[in-house]
Image (cartoon, rainbow, N blue to C red; front, top):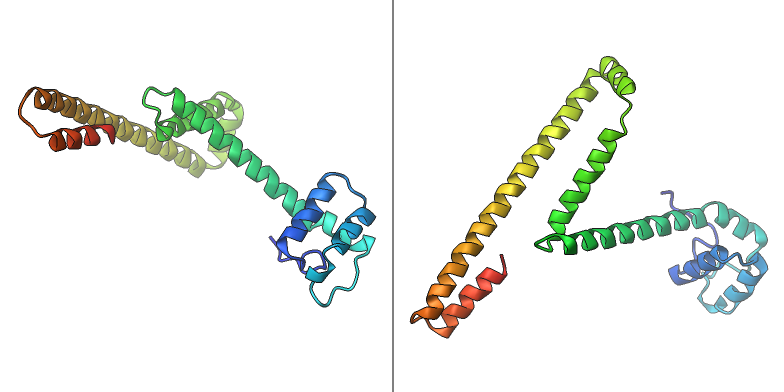
Length: 188
């Protein structure tokens, strides 16, 4: 993104935010100028006044940057919320597992939407693209297998710890030892 240096760009961040929110709400430039006048003491020393032209320029540049950033932040928040919802619906409640599932679903959606004739043409015209695609599938498959082995390992550890804990509760272990085992089990 280009570093902007117009009058509005040189305002403190909270005043730029004020301008952007007012533009977003459809405020007229003169209304924004009146609102900024309330904060004149915070303007950079070289700014004496604002004109409609300053806002026209900002609307086409800095404000558009802000709008894109807001859209990006909203999209990111929605994706996080979705990942957490998926994570809560997985048997383990694991967000990482949910992210893997979402990625697999996106890949499946992508693969089912490929135009086979276009893909064949692309492979013929750019064989390296085919190699990249095959490598991506191989990496995904490897990661999926590693993840499944990890989940199996955790399940075996949990089973072992639960069995030890059951034996310990029936035996002579101290409360501290039992608590340590329970803690380890809960962290898996």
